[in-house]
Amino acid sequence: MKSRALSKITGIFYSTRLAPYVFVLPFLVVFFVFFLYPTISSVVMSFHNIVGFGNWEFIGLKNYERLNNVHFFMALRTSTLYTVLTIAILIPVPMIIAVFLNSKFMLARNFFRSVVFLPALISVVVAGIAFRLLFGNTEVAFVNSILARFGREPVRWMLNHTTGMFLMVMLGTWRWAGVNMIYFMSGLQAIPSELYESASIDGAGVFRKFFGITLPLLKPIAIYVFTISIYGGYAMFTESYVFWNQSMPGGIGMTIVRYMYQEGLLQNRLGFGSAVGVTLLTIVFVINIIQLRLFGMFRKE
Image (cartoon, rainbow, N blue to C red; front, side):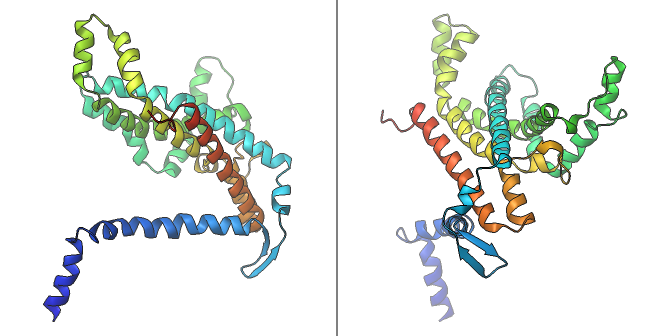
């Protein structure tokens, strides 16, 4: 009996009809439990005033009306600026690095690939602590001590909007440049080498090959990186929190996700925090739809 039951169970994995559903099932469970259900719950919560865990009061669009305040627009501006700056860096720089590290003339390619990708494996909290020590506000901090040798005044890195944004962008770039490099390298390795050989026969130089072959064929990868960078930029939280985990003078690191965390969890206004999250989801969705439309990803070739 046991052998028959076991054979029936194992037979499922060899069934051409059931096996695909069995292998897809873990993803579907994770998607419904950890993404779809929380998203629907957040939408429902955004129309309620929630006190505690069981006292829900339907208030309609009042939570969304409360978004018309200076703190939300400051958070939106910070997140938008951070997203624009990181996209301006995290698309061309990893692409150029990938081109160099994909070249057969590059020495120690595997070593440099590992070095560039290594920051993605390091905890952002640990990296944030290191950045706080490097860019401390005191005169004896590492970067300020270097500036002092050149006769420059110490910079209060975490007490100024410009330098604070610089720190967040720098930390984000340091973390994700290696990941985007992997994306572009996968695209480069999919380009047939015959195209470059034909271009060389026609007398094309390095720059002509790059702009005539490499760049056009990397367009799908670039659009994908652009899309996930928009989401990653607006969803940024940790890069802000590691620099200003408690006090945040002048709202320097106030992003939309941090504003949602502050209002929803710290202030115990889950309904309003949910409205912030739904608004963030809508903003990212609309921006990505527009940019995919502009770059022709919905166009049938």
